Image (cartoon, rainbow, N blue to C red; front, side, top):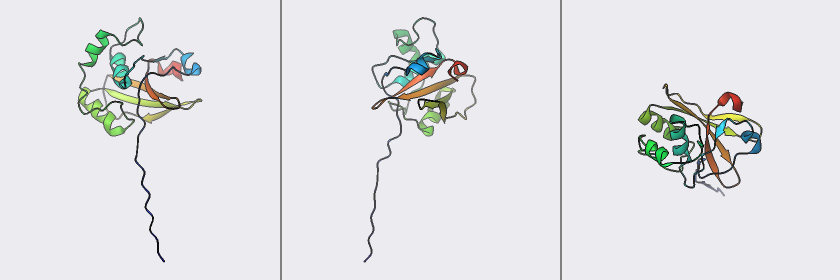
Amino acid sequence: MSRLEINTVAYKPLKGKSYIPLPDKLASKIAIINMKNEDDQCFKWCVTRALNPVEDHPEIITKKLRAQAEELDWSDIEFPVAVDENVIRKFERNNNVSVNIFGYDDESVSPLIVSKHASERFVDLLLITNDATKHYCWIKNFNKLC
């Protein structure tokens, strides 16, 4: 007697969503801007802030930041943004910006996506997680982080 069994599973890539606080170990490095968003667009706010930095309260999403975000091409980008090379590459091509995404596992920072797009404008993002949520943060100073 022969038997064939097929199991399937839906692939759900990591996606950055709404605000979660930084772990104390990361917050103490003063190298990361953790955008205080209440929507699923932390990728958008981090990239926009990285390209338009401010000194006072860079974590706050202001009317000016919203207007600056509209200057970028978000076509075909679905929010929350998945950690998917194809999605990130599309955004990079549409906006001539390089995006690197790193993960954090309680001990170390490691690359998830390293840009192959050559641009003078670049953004380093950190994807942090808690039990149910994933959230992008802007790595303002990579040397301090490491």
